[in-house]
Length: 173
Image (cartoon, rainbow, N blue to C red):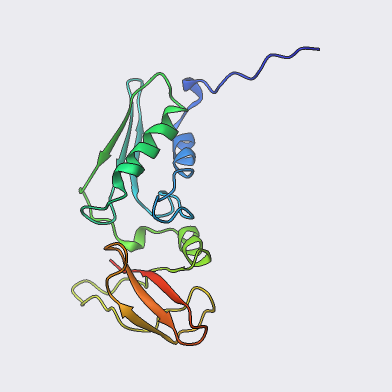
């Protein structure tokens, strides 16, 4: 018996929930273990008969990964709605903060050797670069700040005095 191959999903079946799910497949190019949804970079998704519009909040102004993220979003969503343009807008309508990272995103960071950001300080309080940051490898709080400037503006370099592993920590913003 010969069967026909399954047809690709039709645009009529694509809805906002399916697009959000597809965006969960787009990962941060600098940390490929976390999706842009779990990182909190996706601000909104709008689906109309004319286009799909996706609004992204960059983690930092001048983020070097943003163009790769935009391309990944366009490519992934275009597979769901091949008959409509995918418009991706970089927005500064509200600032991205580390509070936007989902609990699943924080777990993904930890499992991949990054310390998630600490809870945000109250408004107006200075951003603390020192303090007990749990080591993502052993959980020890005996860690020290080695360098406030990591490989990107959003990360710092720390060192665990118990397991002797260096690690990066997402700065709290």
